[in-house]
Length: 93
Image (cartoon, rainbow, N blue to C red; front, top):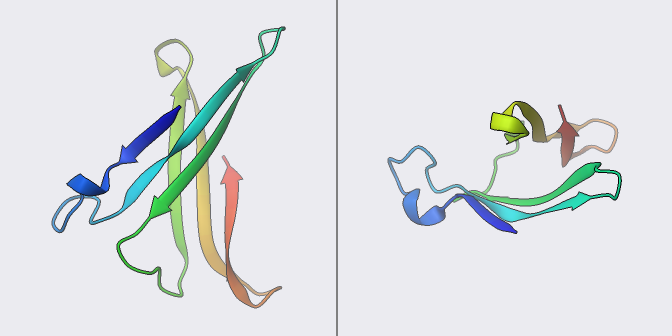
């Protein structure tokens, strides 16, 4: 299934998203024992290049009866001293 969480057509100057977009695809797998997993492939776009600074994008997914459970994710763009370059790191929180 695909999703458009933030649509670039409605995110011009003066809007809350200022030209950003978030879209992607997801897949839910359920085993014979009833255990489920969720795969999400998300693409975040900005209207201009990201500066050489720390930057993060986060989102949450609700599930279960009345969205009683949530999973949160973050992607962080930051300087890595070990490699001496800026990189994206991801984490589930």
